Length: 541
Image 1 (cartoon, one colour):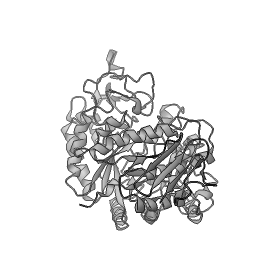
Image 2 (cartoon, rainbow, N blue to C red):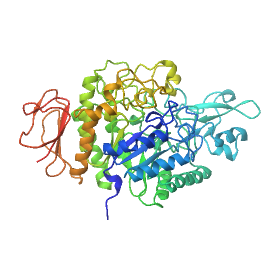
Image 3 (cartoon, helix red, strand yellow):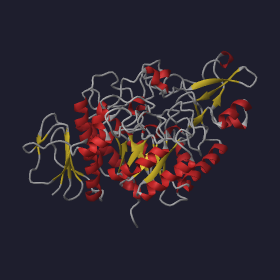
């Protein structure tokens, strides 16, 4: 049988509001995406993952969904979605979309009905409403925290005007958590999955998968003294990675298996490779983002431990590891790798540290070759192939990320990685929108040297490096062989079958390479038979 398309795929994440504006209103849209799809085919990726395109009040960048079977008018309509899916398929690209199943917008008709119906009603059973603690129920039901700061509970006003129950929102207060024990929720989402699979979507990324079940006793959580939402460190947490979540995942998989070649992708930031592996397999999801790899420091020993742990868990159960280095939720790699703190357990780690963007670019280039040389699948966030940095000086008044408001400005949030990407020209909007339009987030001056147009002209650009690596990957890495070779301190070196070796130098000094072998791709150098520090190289025979 032919191998499943997703086992070695490289998927490009599109954040639709910031990818391409086709109608000139300053917001990216599906018309713009449709126009730019040939670029993704030219780049050499196998598919695209589209972040939420649903109707939404946009309290959290579209992850507060008010209609799961529609398209936000800002982006277009269902006809535009159908056109994108059809055009992508005609170009040989697969399409994955987000399924935000943990919560809805508080503007969703389900939640509005729950508010109107009152305590004890079937409408409220769709969500996690609870009575408060203390006199008059004035205190939240427990100590659970929101990912965006503060309590995960908000109190409602009942239909008679009195203070009432509290509802759970593990994210913003505009994102009410659903009750996945409720049969109505289960049945409605069965229909939602089928709606998108019927339209030709090839896969669904399950947002915040570990949140889909909560401990039934709603006991207080032990956060170990850290008030931040750092789920990668949580063990036995009552609202994250509860075992009952797998009942929901298996339900999703049964529906996906009704169709040919459809996949589920887990966003599951959990405490270990073992816990992540539980989301994978023939009855659960086909792939899951490896957040331990994404959040790992730029350190050879730490990276090797993460890679080994991922392979040790994925290979025995027959699923490919899924390597991710960035997304719409993370600081752009060029900025993060240019800081002293190169790890990212929390998205605000390293905030405020000085940044060496040239160092960050060297490391980003090397990281791209490391990631694309590993066995399994990989995801590439829009703009990373251009070497874009984080925009850290956005004016307060344009910031939309709810974490900025909920932390009183302590955390700047994620808007800096969501600034619209530059396509051409020397001044904003850099081809993102027609001349004269203003992008929804301001683009910095000086991005003219990082546009797609500039990258195409420069054989040494980040764009050309990624494009060359994707071509070689497709030609040379058709097997899952993987073997560490060498033991030089600070150097990652592995073979992917006969005639392919990846060398990544994180040692702090140049290291010698085998000058008799063909250099397939190099992020820098070599010079006089030496691979520079913070550089990577693929060697042939």
